Image (tube, rainbow, N blue to C red):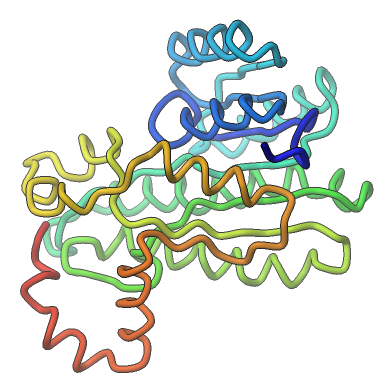
Length: 264
């Protein structure tokens, strides 16, 4: 059990499914209270009821489209007035579309950055003042291994996750004097519904299915790190090792791994 988060209030964006749902359930198992944020009200309501019945913790939910910055301000203001403080924010909402730049639309670019980057930053800004005042809190940003090693057909998605990682690393230094923790989570492909949008043809999933991460395991690792000074969570380890080598010897790495890069 992670006794550190027992009784804490954990807000999770993109909580209606996928890894966000798994993190919420794992937090509840450790005695944390949940604030679920997403666009799909029916799924949020069902998850909230399940968590309260199974774990006996409070579980609130609010409709939130992180693409709408004005909505973010409204929803988090409501949370502050109705619930109070947020101890841990998990910026999980995000999506990707695997496509070459040549065939990507400007709307796809705009939407990905609004959700993956601007929404994440806006949500973070809404909880930081209270955390700074209390000298306690944790921001967990779900980035991607794509933030560390770009591949063909993920140009826009990778760019957005590079932005998330850069923001996270800078924020960590800014809030360290206030005793606030900041962690980036950089997973490889996870077995979730993320790929129903990102990989509509299903080719990428077919090629990497045997290496895809178990979402329950990922959630357990993330929750175990809550309220600790964990800098990064990189999964799987072998993929992160590849990204490290890539930073040191990019030309050689691209030459040796060229065919693997075109699995999408």
